[in-house]
Image (cartoon, rainbow, N blue to C red; front, side, top):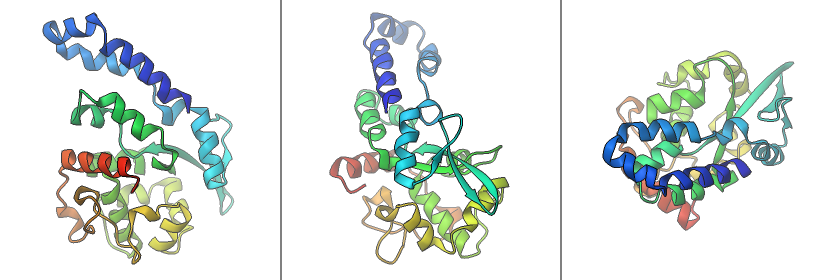
Length: 229
């Protein structure tokens, strides 16, 4: 996976420059614009990433070499990668150690998820607006959906090829098992709460969950460093 490594090289060169230090004092608002221009999204352009995901999930690589293909009910479903935690969230959480944490997350193939790729809304995009990318809350949302409940993410689940893709799973357990997401649930397939270092399970009214994104990010990094996820 070379693209994330290239990102680190470009961003480190900028963040360690005298130009960056000058901007922090004189025009800090422009820094995010420069970072955005320097950053390339591995989920969109990293062919090596998709080669690894193809082998993990036993799926064909798309013609663009940056998607996966699954054929279901005579329909070709395109799937795109989605990292567990984006670079902007990591930088907002800890600017000083941003690149170290970014490498920690991006270097792990098992921290990349795959979701259907089509016009909005998608699981990838809607999970940020609903849950600030909290993967535990998304999985809890999916668990509720599989039991027939109306959820904040339902619009994405019912949209285009995502609906067909989700129908291949008879229940939440099968979804977890087939996508190899067992580390996020306990033996009873209750979703573990990352914001509590997985000491509790996510439960209750899904519309009333507390996001607490900084605490979540802190716990996520701790769990990744410890090898629990």
